[in-house]
Length: 162
Ligand code: INI
Image 1 (tube, rainbow, N blue to C red):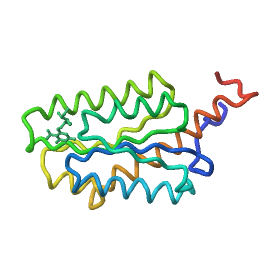
Image 2: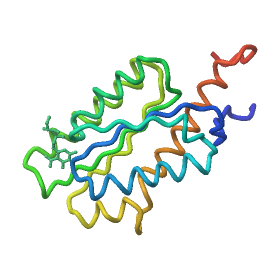
Image 3: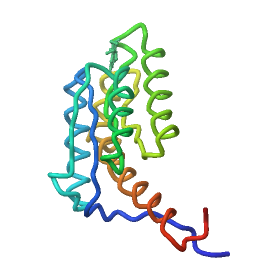
């Protein structure tokens, strides 16, 4: 069997869109910082990163869709935090954020990454935003760079996998 085709983590020249929610900003700020750290480590230029903010996770996909359709971005990272304890419509916000973000990627072909922390408690959200369970923003940014590179590799002339 041949080696699998994979993306790498070289972010030079990639244009990345960040969409973050203001809701639960005390968590989302750490996710954004994590994403920025990873993008810098991948050598994405600061000038190639555009950050837009939306009110809540429910609105992430609308902004991501506009960015994806602009064709100015190689990948988009959606960052938010939904905490069950804080809302009776937790399931609705989670479901819409998940479905909406997945649709952006599926409909536009632009890798659109789900860096939304969904937890039962504030403590779990803290754990996933840079303490003992890693940082979903950092992990999402690595996935964005890898997927952007993978898709362009798959489309390269002469690559016969498509
Ligand atoms: N948005 C979030 O991102 N996280 C939440 O925990 C949350 N809660 O708790 O309700 C939340 N609600 C706002 C929602 O995303 C929309 O902004 C709002 O419903 C307006 O459409």
